[in-house]
Image 1: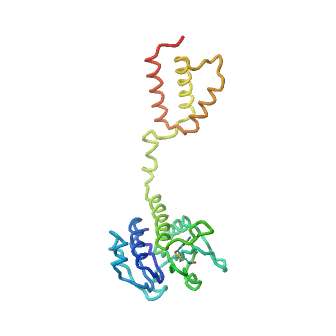
Image 2 (image 1 turned 180 degrees about the vertical axis):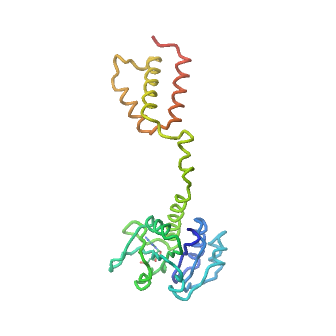
Image 3 (image 1 turned 90 degrees about the vertical axis):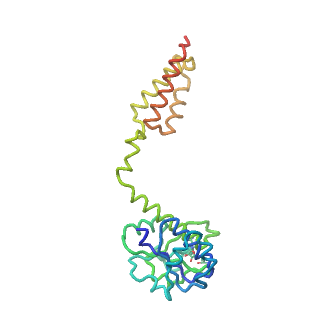
Length: 245
Ligand code: SAH
């Protein structure tokens, strides 16, 4: 999935942003960078900002027009901080990643110019407008930061799909399953017996201790293994302390 996503930068003015984009992509496992009429490229500034991701810059394709950069794509997303007067189908980054995973083919994420973004004519090529939720009073991200956010969402979605069911079930197999209500009942019985044993709790005058301790432990969402651990501690306390009365 990640190899089939191309990042398309339209008329980027600052080569530093091209380099930062390459780095953001490589961090998240994306490889295909297309540059539509970049102002300055190749550039030493871009290479420096790419850090170890200069391979992406070397493979980047420079295109004369947006349609050329989109050739062969099944799905195109236009990233924009601005909602448009024409109602465009607008989605958030998570929905964008889910749709990308579902299409299973070449997909493009298109990013606009630093000063003026994407034109409506350019958005005509896009199936969806993707808007990263931001502070409405200051909604425009640096273009490479916007690339980073979308690439991160792609990676999260891809990673979730990679996880084999066996791995997803592993926590339970390893005893990390949530404790059952029977486990918890036995734990509370053991806890109050121990507190009585050390003279901290008198069942004849329960006050609110029972409820407060239930509330405390229930809030933590105890796992089976944790219940066993706590009961081991209770057992050790009982064994080393003579009954209080
Ligand atoms: N002043 C421009 C902002 C350009 S920011 C404008 O009004 O459109 C450069 C590019 O970064 C944008 O074209 C867009 O592709 C991306 N970008 C910035 N902020 C974004 C956001 N909140 N959501 C989605 N994309 C964003």
